[in-house]
Amino acid sequence: MTTTSISTPEPAGADDHVQFSRRFLEHSRNELRNGELLQASEKAWGAVAHALKAIAVQRGWQHNSHYLLHAISDQLGREFDRTDFFDHLAIASAMRQNFYENNREEDAVAYAIDDIERFLAKLDEVRVSPPMPFTVSTTADQRRLRTLLGWGTAEVPAIGAHSDVGFTKADPADG
Image (cartoon, rainbow, N blue to C red):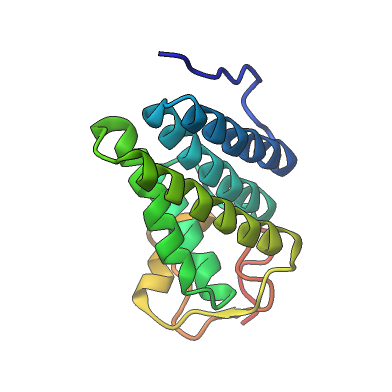
């Protein structure tokens, strides 16, 4: 089995995560060309994970677990009214699963990598855009924001709480 190694230090800032994301996508395509579907799948997932981490770093959000990556994507999808983020992340997650299960055919992995490339372009747009205003409207919003912001269980944004900057660590709520 041939794999492409990425020998760089753990990323520290948003720009590091962006560079990792781009490299992982490139490596994913190379692994696919080499017939290494497991490595192509894992690197495709890694590209998405690092793109989400880049935005999380910018916002001061927690980002050190698989669950948090889903929460980040969900919050961004809600802020930017991108209902397609759920579908894109599901495809990326299927690639993570494929690394462990080896249950996807080559054409499915190729399709997923193409979809992930489109998702990364959308995440790049979000990353360079200012955070969107957001109003907490459900208990799911409360839980997700509490988790992303690293707040304790007693610190919950109220239903109706609003932030003009998308609930970042810098400005958790305007009212």
